[in-house]
Each structure stands twice: as C-alpha cells, then as structure tokens.
Image 1 (tube, rainbow, N blue to C red):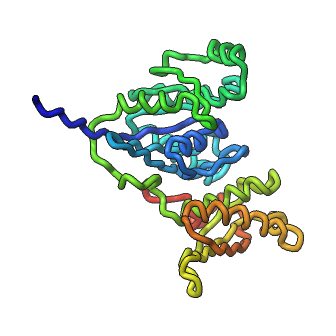
Image 2: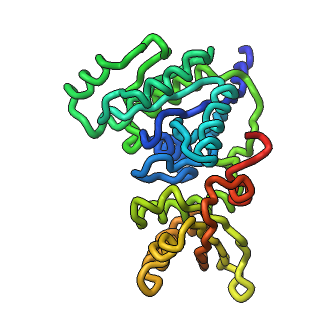
Image 3: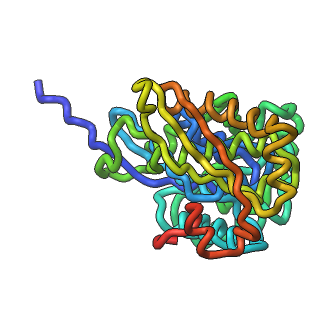
Length: 306
C-alpha cells in the first residue's frame, strides 16, 4: 500500500476589526483558550495590536486584535487607528465584528468602507447572538448593508463559543502553506510584562468611574522572583493618570480602591504566571500624557513599526 501523504502545515495572519466594544478581544481569547487581551464594557479598551497565536497539529493562525477604528481625538487615538489600518495590509483574511444588539450605524459603515479596498477573504461576524431572539436575529441580517462585500456572514457568540469552530474550519481552508512562526505552546507575541500591565489596566477599567478609563496607563517596572520565597514573584507596577483628582479616585478612601484593584489584578496575574504573586502598585500623575509623544513611547504605545 502507498504511504499516506503527510498533510502540509499551514500558517497565516488574520485581522479582527470592528468599531469599539463589539467583542473582538472576547473572540480572540475564546479562540486561543486563554486571556491575552483585556475585556471591558467600556469602548476603546484595546490600545495596541495584540497578536494571539492559535496552533494545532496542522495549522498556526496569528490573530491581530486591532484597536477599535474610530475618529481620533488625541495622539493616542491616532496611534490606535493607525495601528488598526496597518493590520489590514498584513493579513490573509479579515474578520469584521458587529454587535447584533445594536443596529449597524455610521461607525460600522466607516469600518466597512475601509475594508472595501482589501482583496483578501473577508467575513462579517454577527456577535452576541446569545443575547437576542431568532426574529431579532433575522431582522438584523436583513438590514446588513453591502453584504456582497463579505465572503460569508457568520452569526456567532464569542462568549458561549457558538459557531466559533465553524469559523476556524473556514479559516483553515484559507490559510496558505507556511512555517510555524511561534512555538506551539506560545499564545501571544507580547512579553509577559505587557500582558501583566494589561491585566492591571483591565481591573482599573472595571472599578473606576467613567472619567478615568482612557486617562490611565500601566507600566510594569519589574517582575522578579522574591528573594526570600522562590515560588513567589514580586511585581512592581505604576499606574499613570493625568490629573490629581484621578489619582484620588484610583487610590480611594484610605487606599481602599487601589487595594481592591490590586487584589483582583493579582488573581489574574497568578493565573497567567502559574505562581503566587506579590503585587505592588503606585499611582503617578503625568499631565496630558496621551498627547505627548515621549510619554506614549515610554508607556508602550509607540514603536518603530507603527
């Protein structure tokens, strides 16, 4: 009997785009099976192109979770949008997410317009189908503008995983033959310092008032084994705010808010690192840092390739 031909390994890059807060990070975390991007109900949570890596026996797909495409209001916003646009020119397929609970509006149409010039397979993912009835779902599908722009429209639930396996099968068919770009056990191209800073920022988004979220950055200063306890990792991080009033909100009465944020973040960091963690947080004021190139670079939002 002839030997069975070995299946060629495939690899490729897929961009996940959409206006802010449609579930892009949730989908990426679902696909790789671990948190690599923070999730929040506040818009514009993602600030960097976060690459998540999915690997199985036959394929590796690098997912680029772009910052939500929006009209920028400051230098940080310009960096976020430029980052999203760049991702579209580097991939083998594009996934655009929309939220089935919200009618397709100017923001979605703006993103669709940006996709029209890209000659790669494009999928429209109608997310959060677990939140609506079948009739509401059908009504939404009928109202989708320019459905011909997409190779396929796929209803999904990033939270529950509905149709995510089907999506992965479609992507597997599209990926070209290629190398394994990352080790099989690696799920992100970002260093642990970055992911730890994002986990802290996630808890800040969850616990602080509306005026805080887009005014904060987190810088991990050090992450080293405890000199007295080898199974414990000491993490020192600084929270950057723009105004004295914001510093007061983050710290809270007698430090209560900062303690709450630190406790919640520590649990997430321990899951990531697989070790006990001592987390030390400080709060620093850097006025108008989002409009200062030096500060943006220092806090990780500028790089040579953007």
